[in-house]
Amino acid sequence: MGGKGGSGAGVASLLVDGIGVLVTNDPEVGVVEGAALVVEDGVVVWAGERGTAPGGVEERVDAGGRAVVPGFVDSHAHLVFAGDRAEEFAARMAGRAYSAGGIRTTVAATREAGDGELAGNVGRLVDEAGRAGTTTIECKSGYGLTVADEVRSLRVAGGLTEEVTFLGAHVVPPEYAGRGDEYVDLVRGPMLEACAPHAKWIDVFCERGAFDGEQTRAILEAGVAKGLVPRVHAGQLEEGPGVRIAVELGAASADHVTHLSDADVDALASGDTVATLLPGAEFSTRSPYPDARRLLDAGVTVALASDCNPGSSYTTSMPFCVALAVREMRMTPDEALWAATMGGARALRRADVGHLAPGARADFVLLDAPSPIHLAYRPGVPLVSRVWRAGREVG
Ligand code: NIG
Ligand code: FE
Image (cartoon, rainbow, N blue to C red; front, side, top):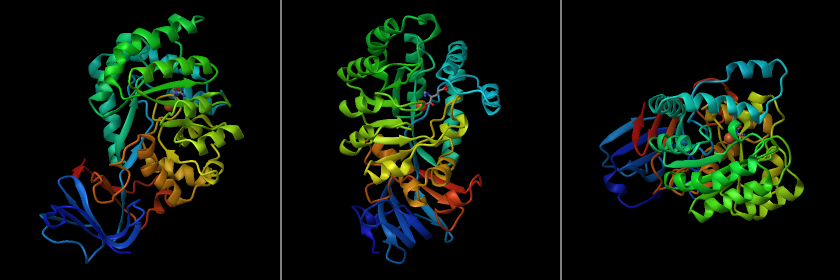
């Protein structure tokens, strides 16, 4: 497979040479054995067979025959929270079922926390994700659930990522118990008004115990009117209307999608909405995994994300999610890596990340392994050796 150049290839500043296997996710360049990658000003300018790479670089990195893959794009995470729910996890492992109600425990802790504590927590998790190879991460609000606490959650998230999601409709908070519709009016009214300037996306947890189809639609439509793009928590605990609403409203992604009707699968296959699978949640709630093969075989675009949150999936590790997807969801190693990189980029409607074609942001990971198959083949082993984001080494 030959190389593919872009503008400015002759004055590249960084050459990664001696790559054993380079995964570009670029249909033209594909997977290259014996590869090199050239970066200039934070952007990939050339990827292909080593030996044919343009010269004139300022810095050279020797990959030593190891694999290089695009940085992971984690398109679903809830990072703005205080405290943890380790005891709830332990109780679940002893037999108690997961329920959306646990979210209120974290809401109470988050409301109590100062801004500095929240920002510190998000920073710690973003760093942790970065060390595991994540170079783009989405971050939701949803543990504040008052106008002021949602705004500050979004501000904190916005300090660390451009992919910020307003999730005021995570669960009905205790002070609105029995008055869910009044809370929906708050979310789609004054809360949205205050939050929309701080977010790019709007999300709703459409599930029994959270928000029903009518409420979900009303909130998402209000968000769209304010210029936000929808994404939906759908079908996590049982089949419901979330997927249909997501597709009808042109949502970027329907997430979890563990419980799907045939009509849901058909709707996803015929629309532009990505199905984002979150196997960390099934792992941590000891639940059946989503049927990835059913979605892939129907032609649905599938993404993998961490769902990092203190209740249902307290992991920032995309390699762990890849391993789960391969072992538990019958995705091939190639499919899982694509879903964790390019799939995430599609779910965030980003053309500049998730791949290493010329023009892409130079986000890449050097694995301590000769092939990306090792991400699933050697689960739990820290194979992420070095990480670059926009051409700069992180960590
Ligand atoms: O995506 N499902 C809703 N939200 C999270 C769980 C949040 C929590 O339990 O704190 C999720 O799994
Ligand atoms: Fe979630």
